[in-house]
Amino acid sequence: MIRDITIGQYYPAKSILHRLDPRTKLVSTLLYLVSLFLFKSISGYLVATVFLMAIIRMSKVPFAYIVRGLKPIIMLLMITVLFNLFLTRDGDVLFHAWIFTITEGGLVTAVYMAIRLIYLIIGSSLMTFTTTPNELTDGIEELLGPLNKIHVPVHEIAMIMSIALRFIPILLEETDKIMKAQIARGADLESGNMIQKAKSMIPILVPLFVSAFRRANDLAMAMEARCYRGGEGRTKMKPLHYQKRDHMAYIVVIVYVIAVVVIGKYVPLHIWVF
Image 1: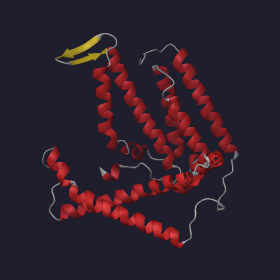
Image 2: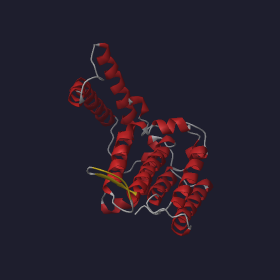
Image 3: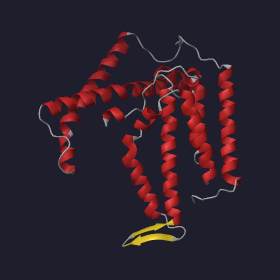
Image 4: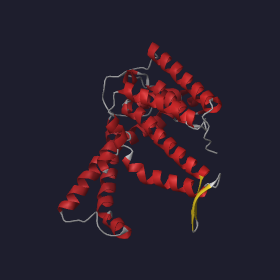
């Protein structure tokens, strides 16, 4: 399960998505995520599916690698589906037993909400797969740059996000090592009920927190030793500049958003979510 967590990890490849400006990818990802909530019919989902499949193909990130990142959220996905399935009471009743009732509207809502969640995670993961942490930091700092005028610590916010993304694969690797070490010492991490499994996680969480705090302290000392004093007056090794491909990417994303809204509302393939 630990190795299935791919969020925040960069996948090196030579694709047009990897060469895009990080600001383009950040804004485009935000527009894509917003677009998932702008339509209510099956025709909108068809457009979103075609667009997402095209982006995945252009990214040259293996589809199996992307799907592997969905495994850790299966439980969250199932809870979301069940809540929408049993708590939405619209349309004809399809099933009723004791306190459980499934209606036509509840079934459609549950399916659509599950698709939305999957597409949301895949879309946001593609940004981290195709963008290095340094590029993400520079992109966030440039996009939030105007907030400096009202004394918002933009550089510090971007640095915190970058460090958090860098620590995700490191902590996952550290967790895997600790689990293997505990299993080698005879620890049973699989059998037992929920309470016993929770107790068995204590020998993993304690050394993991100790290791995380130690790494954070080492990082702070290293930054102080190099006289790090924040973003004011600092220059960049690779300044960000928009290229022709970035403008084309903006046009494609805007056309997609318009298309998904128009088709999702006016093309007669209506299976309404709400």
